[in-house]
Length: 152
Image 1 (cartoon, rainbow, N blue to C red):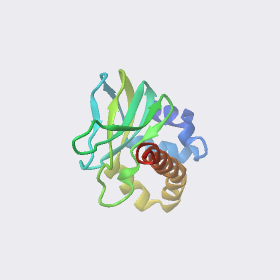
Image 2 (spheres, one colour; image 1 turned 90 degrees about the vertical axis):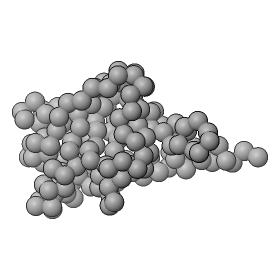
Image 3 (tube, rainbow, N blue to C red; image 1 turned 180 degrees about the vertical axis):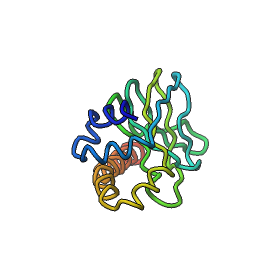
């Protein structure tokens, strides 16, 4: 997994993590590709991975009954998505769709949970990286809802 280890150490999400942590986590990684408009994750499905965007763009969408999906945020090269694997019941809380051809590194959730359960320092390091992302996403969702429903 030398290649994933190097790719992950170079990614800004992992830059504050120890090299050993990246090496351990890289054992859960694989490459994935999605064509434009392909669904990557669907709300309610098992949250079995998280993703680093190597190249491309991904729209995070929220479905509203009887309406077009609301784009909460569009992510680009270098961003991550998919924090639902951390929080029980491990279900996606939104959809993610490739906006254009997109290359990702995915990290398998069961593998990650197994490794952080054995190594609490690794878990603390990883959670410390995710908390700011989760806060940013919740704030983006709040602002989007104000934009949509705040108009009268």
